[in-house]
Image 1: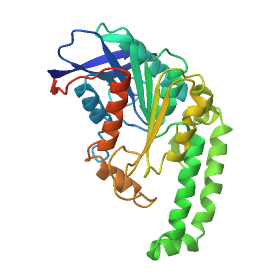
Image 2: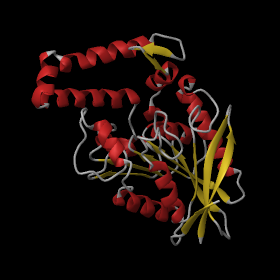
Image 3: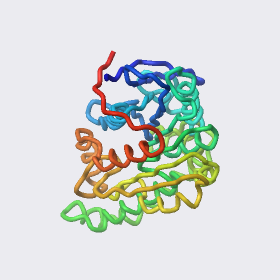
Length: 325
């Protein structure tokens, strides 16, 4: 069999452009997986620009469709081919858009409407959890960001940055410590955060850079654990042991909140990108590492975990070839 890819439009408050992937021949309605991308100007495939292209969401779609699932991925507001303004888009706008995408899938004649699964990566975990608390879903998959508020993730990242500065070698490390940079990280961050939280503007300048203030305020006020306690569909959460952007340690709390079947896994040598890595990124190497990881395939253990969980809960089909039309 072959995979057919179709360009589609999802009507939310703005028109969102996406890619629907499905097996060419299906005799019965199939489960479908909605892929929700992470934060920033990532498009439906995981691309920011020519240099920074994670490719993750295209890779996930290709893999999941190859084992028998219809998949949908889309450009978020103001990104890629979708309408809207990225900087004025808030968390709840993104949740609305994801709910519109869920409804799009449920209305497709090829889709089993009771088996629509949401897969979120990074910020997509937060959005996916909010959707699962408000929609009747067949399942929820959370990659690299489950059971964690954005304020907690950012604080952990700052703490790791301080450690990196303290142990940095050479002239760069000496100068950073000489000027007390490690002692200023938290103070400067809190100053910027407070400025945003006290504002009412959708967009404002922080350190001379335009910032999506509405998005940040809504994230800081949102408690993902409260919505996890409303989730009744099966949940799978996976984070890499080498993830420096999301905390793998908090996954153990997932079953405390979720009412239904909740499974979690920490994968060794997996980064936030869901790719196989052999070393931890630091504040000094992170950007370079992310660029390099874009050329890597999905971590093989992640693929194994996804396929096993999906097979146990939904269907088991033979791999298929892909074709774009």
